[in-house]
Length: 264
Image (cartoon, one colour):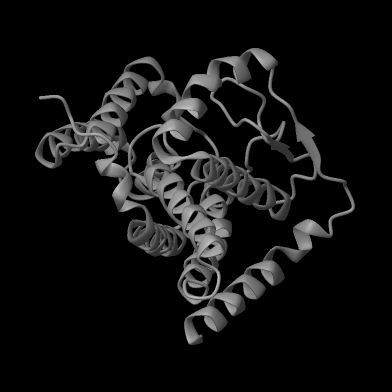
């Protein structure tokens, strides 16, 4: 019961922090992706449903929407009143805001707000799963499904691999102190992820590593920016916030690395 009460307090604190964004004068709009993207995503959604069940598939979609809403709130708190919620936040689609963040500090905050906003719901879902196990097992299983889905989504997103949010966060931190080493560090981490996938026999991590390696080849220019960098104090704060976030989601999302074994 204590765990549940603390989780409720965490949700309340999160709601209080984002209240200015929710109370903004501009109404929140929703961006709907082209129906052709829905057709392309259908096999992936069907695969998740067949492997993990419909409940987990729906929980995964909800976790993605919560994470996206966190980025939207981050933009609005940073002064982007035009921020819109993307139902399918895919690369190459419409952006959350028409304007780029004014500086690296704002960009760091927006990137962290995605997983930051989703942390309290994940903790609450784990707490409900434990509290309801004996009285309402079906509801407890549903809550745990969401908690595991949220942990997986945000843990993968926070991996320090370009161009995942975690990799972009790392680039902002590196630009503040070691700007000339950003590309080298990104390549080294990608190689490390691929090597680690072979050690852990993680097919998912191997796939992520290959995709990030491809992104480094095709989109290295995205690392360049002329906006104001983080100060040393902001970089230190950002590093600890990033480390705390990925550590928290590791507790709920590490299992996703063993979804399917590497075929070698």
